[in-house]
Image 1 (spheres, helix red, strand yellow):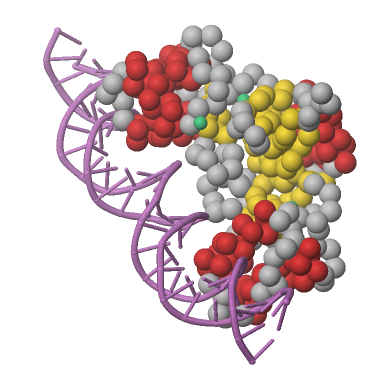
Image 2 (spheres, chains in turn brown, orange, yellow, cyan):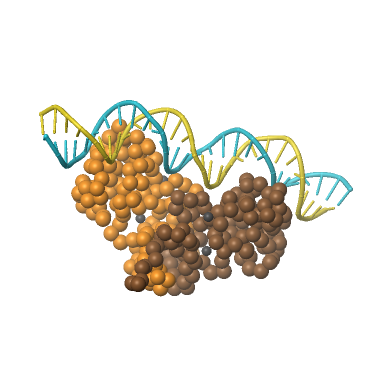
Length: 141
Length: 141
DNA sequence: AACGTAAATGCGATCCATTCGCACCTGTCA
DNA sequence: TGACAGGTGCGAATGGATCGCATTTACGTT
Ligand SMILES: [Mn+2]
Ligand SMILES: [Mn+2]
Ligand SMILES: [Zn+2]
Ligand SMILES: [Zn+2]
């Protein structure tokens, strides 16, 4: 259930979704975006490829793809939701409180620990939604 | 910067905030709530103590107390934000996808690991926003 | 104890990210 | 190629959260 190469079409088919030009355009934009764009930003970028796509469809498609597990939604604070292609391995995020930059925090140990904690309570994790707001430590000059 | 006993008043003073009856009422309600209520729910409960408090003030007070570090906001998915008194030790949350119940996940190891990961990138953590959606594992009957 | 001032509140209006309704298109499969 | 379910564009609506402003309140100062 991951979109690694350029098999958008196959991934959509496997999810039982129609292969529309809007969905292909959105997926290809998201594949080449590393900055975790929000719906409005995705909308602008997608329109570079296909200027007929509407904002409503961007929202609908993102929700559809999220439900299908192809896309992940990031609910940060005080800003519209951001999106990314579902990564091969789950990862947390770090938001630089000064610059707003979003940094990936991949950690197998983190995932393992989280699974253990949930398992100990009799739960299996469905999805992870985790980020920290952090500030760069000033090194003495 | 934590509200442990009944020192609401002191905590407010230390934060440089006026000690209003609305703020005291809201803090006392939040202290006795273990279910992570949202603003609307807090509003209803607070009005049991003081029926003059407005919803706008509940929102404003929650934001003010959050800024002061006394309260923490939980942005789950597809529902209004929830709130809790800032706990002594940071903890993650688990949302049962079937019941909606929110369960605390305190883990020193988790906090330590997260700090290490951030530190390795030259960051110090300001706040943690982490929850997992999970499903109870069915044990064979 | 009354005063002066800045901060806080109540109320309604407003914002804005996201969702909806519906008429019109388009993939898909026979 | 035809039929039909599913998808889309457009504008309207939703709803959680915030704002503007007149009024009240907390609190340090006379
Ligand atoms: Mn952005
Ligand atoms: Mn609730
Ligand atoms: Zn990411
Ligand atoms: Zn909690």
